[in-house]
Amino acid sequence: MKRILVVAAAAGAALALVGASLLPAQSPSPAVRAADDGLAMTPPMGWYPWNSFGQEPQNERLVKEIVDALVSSGMKEAGYTYVGPDEGICFARGEDGHLKTNRERYPSGLRGLGDLIHRRGLKYALYSDAGTRTCSKAMPGTKGHEVEDMRRFADWRADYIKIDWCNTEGQDIVATYTTLHDAQHAAGRPVVHSLCSWGDGEPWKWAAPVGHLWRTTSDICAPGQADWPHAMKMAAENEKLYPWAGPGHWNDPDMLIVGMPGLTEAQNRSFFSLWCMMAAPLMAGNDVRDMSDETVRILTNAEAIAVDQDPLGVQGHVVRTDGQVSIWAAKPLFDGSRAVLVFNHGKTQAEAALRLSDFGLPADAEFYVRDLWRHVTSNGAAGPDGSFPVTVWPEDVRFLRVSRSSEFPLPPIIVADTYLLTFEAPERAARKLAKTLTLVNKGTAELAPWKVAPGLPAWLTVTVSTDGRRQTVTNTVSPGALRRGMYHALVRLDNVEPVSGRPMSAVYYDVDLDVGGVGLGLSK
Ligand code: GLA
Image 1 (cartoon, rainbow, N blue to C red):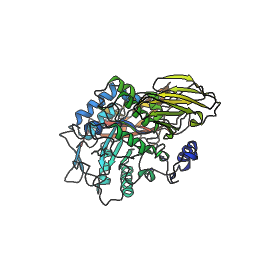
Image 2: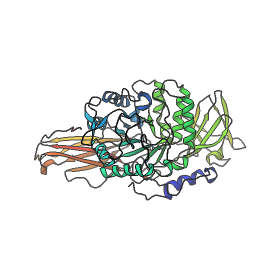
Image 3: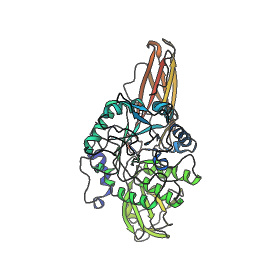
């Protein structure tokens, strides 16, 4: 099990900051717990195919092209990490009961695809279903095969598994997702578990010990058909669930529709700001091979992403409405500042009055305002009643940080150049071999060196050196004593966020060692 230790510490601290008067009538039970497996301590970021492609044309070529686009567009550098097929008809169940890659669509095998993704410094996301078949019935579900399927996903080196809830008649939802979690744990590979029951069974009330994120709503759109009013309905449903989110356990109002055909620039900006304010997972759903400059600017806005990825992990919510404008606040950030979102739902320009009390400041406080889309900082000035006006264009937002300090630091966002190192050595070679992996912190905070978790095999040593926000992880293998064969190690690194002192999402990667030319890239 994801061990259950932190009860009041995470959920309670977040709630204390929100303020009792703002809690919904039904507050979360004390059984809601933060994860302590060190995964998804901030909302997962990545790309999933469903919103733009549905099942077609999901295949290896598409995923490879998407990987290239994530790298070349700067999305990877902005923090988007998890990528892979959704219900992309990528496997079938063989007669022996084990899952097998659909080689027509994925000729390198699902392990080969994972290796490619890892080599590029991205993480591998796969999809399955908790019932007998997936939603379209094109792929087998995990029912009755939980242990071997999760083992197969680990063999394929998946880092993230989304598990749908179709064709589950008669199944108990808590027991099913618990079994799947236990099976993932037994398979021995760290994996982010994304529950996808569209809010069925109210997973926010029980899933924190067995999953890292859970869908709270129905699908945000039919493939290829972004639908603004529907998306706003999803946002409103998810907003109410704010007390249940926190580090390691997130409400998921579904993938992003930013950059899909049919949305205006203001709608894209608003959607992205709402998802960042709600600390929602940021799984892009547009065709990233073909993006306008404006879409790239929105999806890679580091100041907006910093609000989403804030290590306190508080889900912001509406504190009041003023006509057609909703005022979202109560999102304290790691440096003591607050994120504030002013969203104009209407089709005409609107003015709203922000009150210093909306974000916990006394009416006579000196403060600074950072505009996260205009990228400017100004001296705040409130009137005698402790409020100041903001103008918002139709269906647009003002996304702000308010602070008593004029500095607006960005929390760490970690980007790696690779998550897979492969070594080849002749049998009984005396010479040591070394390869490095680079971790770059895209935030502004300085990090202590990542700490290597114990338990490495005797043939591998790992050291970390720091140079500003760049850390070099040196992997040295000593194949001397080893017999011919394939060897594998999973290296895990841990760190704490420098300002809040909270654990950060662990970094981990694979090291493969081929002694005597047995051959790498085994794929099933
Ligand atoms: C469900 C999920 C979607 C997608 C499809 C695949 O509808 O909610 O996100 O995974 O299944 O069929």
